[in-house]
Length: 266
Image 1: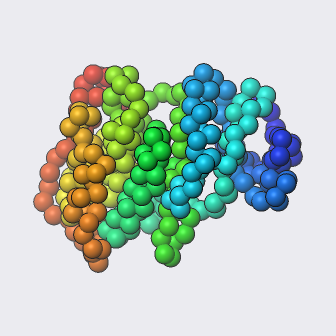
Image 2 (image 1 turned 120 degrees about the vertical axis):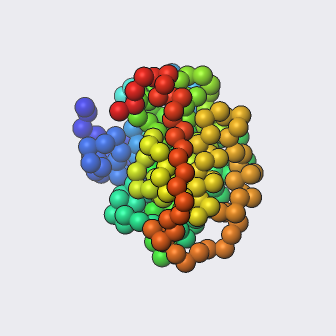
């Protein structure tokens, strides 16, 4: 792999690499502003969504990390983003163990607000998962959706955040597939693990939202407008933690059909 640290690509100087990932910290040498730079392999898939990335550069929303620029260099696509230091939702949940119900509700609301800005511009996210939710401020809580629009080709085995119809190649990404991903992210915040096993505890009315998002049939999945009207979103914040709200058991495995078709998931 080519060492890019110290290299200048057009207006950007790459200063460091993040944890051996295709993600770099750089500097806009014209404005002297720090940026984040992500490298993607150049392929037909990335080329086809280049127009969407260019559209995203024109969108600003406080709950989105949108691209500032897009470059092509040495058989790769480099997408330049605003630099927002913070902690991924994955690390945040693992560190805190049990999120307060208020936190789950506030994060869900903010993600919905950001996602609606994409839908308003006829765009999708395509890759909603805890790693792509950034906690940029903790008091008051502030989150942003990142890595919008580009989904590298990869194996979908055990990718619980990707809708089953996409994994089984029965459809193209749409709002319904993004809503599945939202449900999986909310499940992760509530349970501290990815979906794929039976939900054992009912925790307030957040479970109603999760069930409706993780409906196997896309046509039966809850819509964005319906999500906004659910009690979990509209109710005022509660004081109890999720751990204190354990109630009746219900058993729901949204992956039952996927497991049957693909044979195994573990």
